[in-house]
Image (tube, rainbow, N blue to C red; front, side):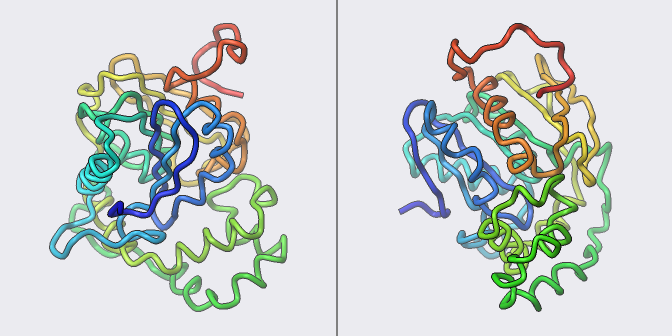
Length: 272
């Protein structure tokens, strides 16, 4: 039995999908089927999120520690290497794995950690008002998410088009945020650090940012052969905004896009 909760489907080369802080694997639902037509898709709940247990006592949930947990999961699944794709915190974790032999390619969507230095070296707890409210309202979420207006208010910071998020997925996303046991410690660990060592990534790498992302702004990662894109009309979690575009990006980066679907060479910078 795997140490982390996973959803697996498809066949072919493996791709591991990693969500952001406070999320769970359900954020990948819009792209699971198109990816599974070409790849062995493994969506993961990171330690302390979704239905996965937290890291063992004493292990701080740094992006490096989370990357090691994903590597252990790959060992359990018999995977020497895999394509890695991550969103937000998951993008940072994928970049950490990209520096190792475990990665065949890396797709980082709106990745955290690309700030110039630690945001808060002292590790002060971040404000928790939004999470407290989500926890208080959790029993009411299934009914509340019936309202398009409430769905929009709950998801507007992370999705450019909340109306495209099905009610069941919206309920899971907000509920996951409310119940995530590792949120506070992981948030502190993220803010105390930043991603380094990009030059060690020697596999195909795409870093993509949402044009309407309210949380992360585009930067260019200094890594050999890195491709930097802006996803038009997308927010911080672009899988719901433009699932076809995201699926194509992951297939392109992994080298699994069918020849019949390949378009003429495109100027780097946007993807639509």
